[in-house]
Length: 347
Image (cartoon, rainbow, N blue to C red):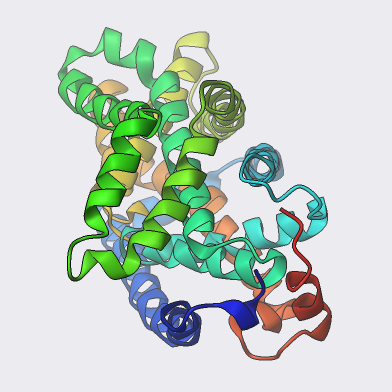
């Protein structure tokens, strides 16, 4: 199904998403600046600045390389998911372009802007938007399960984190399991078709469910979570290097704590539904550094700033570079080649 065959409601979605997206992103970027400023004030701007100045900057390229390692494996996971929903002849480089272009969408509230990836996917491949949204959801859930897996040993060592860990784990597993109870899901969708308002979107609900059923099958889920666990481990090691660069002594215990703190803070940030986890993730990282490693507030604030720049803001910057060279993604120009491709079903 190409763009010319889109129902009116989906045409409207494609027309209204870009301006709404920019408004939400602007708010997220401003909020991010405020959070960074508050973090520096929290640790005393001069002392935090001194810690950043004294940081062993020779380690930072390695930290960024580990972030790229994370992005690369997650990109392969995204491409793997596309194959699961039937998009099999889509070139890897174009798939990677969409994946990286989605990074700035993380700073929208609740990451709702990531629905734009489904619109881009529809424009390029003809895959239903609802199916693309199912892939985006599967990405988020598999990432959540991956960082929870990395947090397991830390939660065992520090039981005070167990309630939040268990609540999020149960929620994510419930979504995955429920998607595989096919008769119940199809019955619910068929019943919803009889309702006056929901009935209008029941065909989209069916497309969303079929996509969810495909990406949450046991083999696909285990593969995605395994890839996610290894990829997020890379960022955990990067955080360990940042702590070393701030003067911490190398040890196996410090490495384990760095991986746990970053992984669990990622979960907290995602669960908060704040743009990019802003505020929640920073508070979690700095707070856990002070509580579990008894680091001074200025070192905790500096470490938090450095890891967030190396992960969240590095990714946002990469995505904006893709936007700069891909105006067709933002609807600023129409790409004839892309339109021709999308009118040729490949799934």
